[in-house]
Image (cartoon, rainbow, N blue to C red; front, side, top):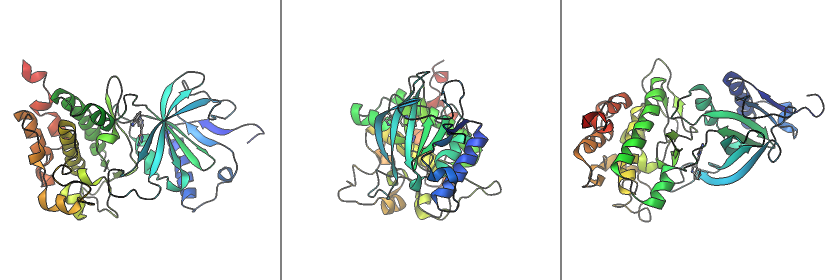
Length: 334
Ligand SMILES: Nc1nnc(-c2c[nH]c3ncc(-c4c[nH]c5ccccc45)cc23)o1
């Protein structure tokens, strides 16, 4: 690059995918990239109108300010946190336009191509929008839509169980995201309260680092590893015999129980201190229907029975559940 000219540029989602493909190859040592070894910032920003480059630079504390927000761990709710499966999410403010964004910092050695790929390829109002990614001194800065209301987990931890109307409001929007992603063959693999963030107007799905897109000619994904957070995992996923998008529906059912009761399924009956793993419990005892609170209305109870069905073929799809009268309260009041 000309002297003083930075390596960050405006581009399309295709340009951004090419960039993260290149650096994820570098992350796994398969190819050298001249800029990677310099202190040169490199990257692609998608939105010309509200992220302002200066001579190909988008530098922290110059073109954009970061404010520490939330330390996040992948599988933090599990008994173990795989090495490096962590990051930090900051609030980011563009210094010129004051655009507010979330910025996730991912050490290059822990970066997965799917961390960014799914959000770059599949846009939906209930999937955290991707604004760009910049590699700087071995750390990838991923700029995304901010859920300034924090996550559903924070809401539950600070305010306790949610009212049924709130649970329906959140569940509908997660189902809208899943209906879209599942139509593209994408499995999120980690639906849980900490991966649903809130803005003033909507709920948004985040963290696609464990997501996969099934091949077009197959309706079954045969996993190489166990993906997700144990308390929310479906029985078929735990068995590792192959699963499909319906595993996300079961995780949403588990998430709905957490929203209704304030606790994840199983943990009240089987405290984490005594049970380092829930995989056997999920295999032998699922589904956790007895964790549905007495106060739960009959219509919402039937949504949970469908979403938590042990047999994925009999579990409701996202499209089917979105038609359920319990999730369309305004229509059935007429
Ligand atoms: N794991 C992950 N991958 N992408 C995100 C993400 C994208 N946009 C966001 N907006 C808000 C938060 C967030 C979570 N807990 C919070 C508590 C307080 C404030 C904000 C938050 C997280 C994100 O998170």
